[in-house]
Image (cartoon, rainbow, N blue to C red; front, side, top):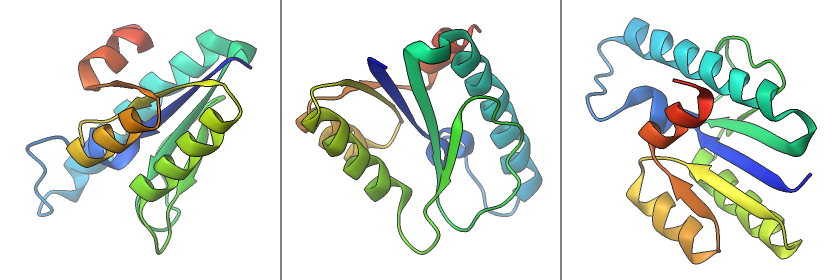
Length: 127
């Protein structure tokens, strides 16, 4: 496996217009994200590993297909992603982090990851 894709699921599902008063909207966006990312994982197959990270406890988020779903439980999904980036880079492998979070973007870049936003992730997922 030559490349890893780490997706900041909570950040990308919520978007800039997130409002906690509308949990159904967040759930719908989460399911759309899962559908798109599972298509990417299926298309990449054994050439890459795709992981989606969410803050909080495990909960229904939609079908993941070949993508792996991770929940931070008591911790932070950003911390989990940062740790995984360090681990992958220490093995000399390529890693792509998909997020719109400025702090995670900076730390991932500092560790040598390629960072993409929602738009580029959507293109990679096929639309």
